[in-house]
Image (cartoon, rainbow, N blue to C red):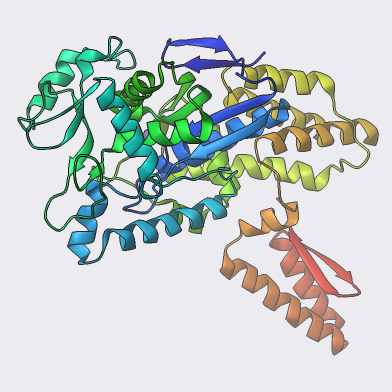
Length: 458
Ligand SMILES: [Zn+2]
């Protein structure tokens, strides 16, 4: 049975969906003011792609919602700097995000609500919170959530609330009754975009959009809520407070948080400036290599980003592709014992490092000298299990060639042209010499009706 580590209870719990065979999942998406970096790619795309693939493998129908925060201080600041409307920035970076999401070949959400397109839902929830006395209108006109009214406030935090309170006091604006009270509706400032509300022109705070949109798309109580570990507090704590106060029910059954991507033991983040964009990394590496690198560590652990670890991921995935190329899976049957071990690993809070280790065992078995039928079974099982994680999805010849540099490929192509010319000229000794040269470069030629194909031997 699948067990998921629930951040709220701090233990692994057997997974039971609210509706049999169906899973509802909400993931906090991107604030669109910059290109996605590798840390975003892990927490927004890769981990939940793996989770959803596995849930589908277990027979669940999945309803997946991931929001886009398209109005926020950072977006407004960037728009001011560039002298453009906030929507220009939001649209530009939402498009950039979709581009890399497509390139990464991950499962896309079924619904992708934007804050600015859900103002009615957001305003209705704030009105509800004010009516139920969980929120107050401050002297400056902003609407705040009153954390004292919510008995369980702080249960998702891993630090003592007073330490947060001390930190929050530094930039306290005087309007809040407690430094931890958080804004639901902000009054408009000159030059800012705004929407009409019962409290005047303004815009929503960040936290309320997720509560309003998850309630709207998934209901008052849904199965899984995911996001990066940095969202635990205050963002997710505030979501719980708002949703539970408004709807009268615990909103989320399982909270899943993804560990940081680090560079030299420091969290990768836009504010620290130590980030690598997904776009840049995708220019150098196959998307499967990037996903393999990320899933080689458990999703809750920190992940160290380095060129070397990507190279290692590429080398490891290459080994699996070589098996796919060299050991035919035609007619192969699933080896149940391996399937079971794979599922046992994944059932243990999505233990992908262990699941990946099983793929290598299968590759080794497939290569051992034995009868073709057995080898085909191992190869077919490898195919099936790798696919659950989104690996080995392309033609091995294509994958194995993408690792070669463009210069190398051009050199090979030129030598083949020269050899074909020599053959046309009936200069057999020159043709043979070129073939030897290609063999020394680990190139195997296959002359066929449609010209000469080649592949690289590892
Ligand atoms: Zn959120």
